[in-house]
Image 1: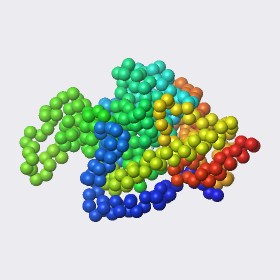
Image 2: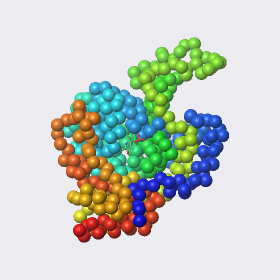
Image 3: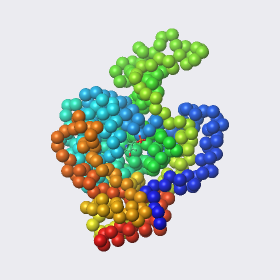
Image 4: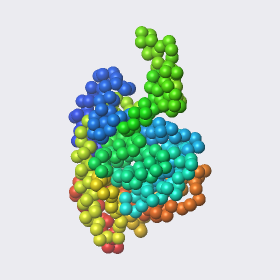
Length: 398
Ligand SMILES: *Cc1c(COP(=O)(O)O)cnc(C)c1O
């Protein structure tokens, strides 16, 4: 039996008709950028998450950059983050000109250890950017308390955590802004790239919506005013009237932003898939529970001691093994796809060499040597999962 690590085609088979008809509707509408389907998705997503603003954008990496810039992070600032994540997390900090400063992670859930944050705060620190890694909510209360005490902002990288919750609130709504990705293999995946920033803060929303569209128009002027503590009236064109041939504000630009948007076809597809998200996440949960039960008593560590009163969405199911390479080899020989997230801790990435601080991060470094991810996508069957478990148990018996 061949068991893939992930198979996006199975999910498509499940909602093929609905997706086919909504994509045809979008094509017929002729509205491919912005418009009704994007607005509709943003509204439904805001409802689902229980958040005031949803600002769709091109991908999760853009979402992180937009969110960082919208809280004023830029050159000379430091942002404290986790060393155990996809590269985009720390890359986004560097891409807006700031310096990523890495805390260490903890074994219980592989998230940024709040106990390692305060020692890294300097007068340059502007924000904390933890990740809900593999869909497990990080310790939001502790992080928010540290941020409040030191006057810092918090951004959640929730790219792997759509649908998870912490103390009754969805992740991505627990701080100044949440960042999400709709990369095809994420828990809510588009048929291409996509992302969003979520926030309850009106100012963050204004600046984000300006930045994702060239800093143009009225919203651009408002965003400039917010970032520079001025009033937007000073910057709006005086001669602009409503009866011009074209929107008189549109070609006035107030900020160096970007072009980052979710197109209408992706938004329509995601609107359909959003209806299935909870069901898919429940299935991931069920699969994770079956792994946890089956692997009890083995030498493997599972790191699923999550925060109290929280729900994880198992974007990945990770095991830590002293014999990671040999185990991965054994599983692959048995036709089982595995992932190695993440083999290199971010503070040791070549691209960060120029802002690397000399200290070692023992937990992250150890976890990177041991972590292996097993198939956990919602369409994986029990039979397939049993074959994965059998192969692991055979290896364990040596
Ligand atoms: C996927 C991911 C991103 C980046 O998302 P893209 O849409 O691929 O740009 C950022 N952070 C984390 C934790 C991710 O898993």
